[in-house]
Image 1 (cartoon, rainbow, N blue to C red):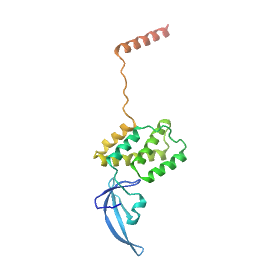
Image 2 (tube, helix red, strand yellow):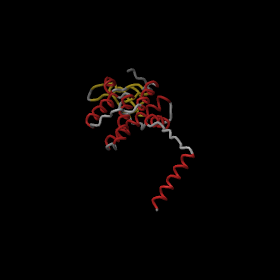
Image 3 (tube, rainbow, N blue to C red):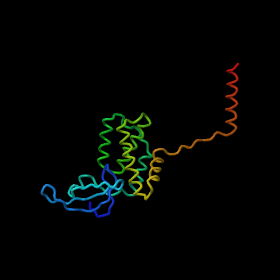
Image 4 (tube, rainbow, N blue to C red):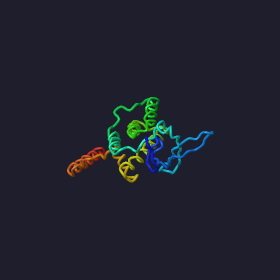
Length: 188
């Protein structure tokens, strides 16, 4: 992957970074080239040996098409989430290490589905929150949205609004009359 100063890249599990430059440093008597990255969220600096850029999984920010695929993944409920935490943990670690936007969405979707069955343990809740944050961060960059709007897109994908049918007034009156009759009958 060719890196240029000012380019936005994704460091798996860490979020969006901006390339600050490629510098040579002497460490242990050896001169090496390092890519200097600055995390956009908090300004933290990371240096990666240039020859290891591919190994750490550094990738360009996902395309709009990949962003839409991630949102579609969230809209599709996980039909059979893995309930064995050991297997699920292994699968999640692999997806997180891969660093793809779709992998992040799959982890978020699975944990969201499980949260309907039971409360997530603290560790999984932390993973859920972290994956959600990474997804929000990247979607806001992909689509040029404020963070709040990206959060709304994720919320809508995970839980689309439910349309409640309003009862007609006549049905409400009949239900109220039936309840009043029942109450009067129990008092006698």
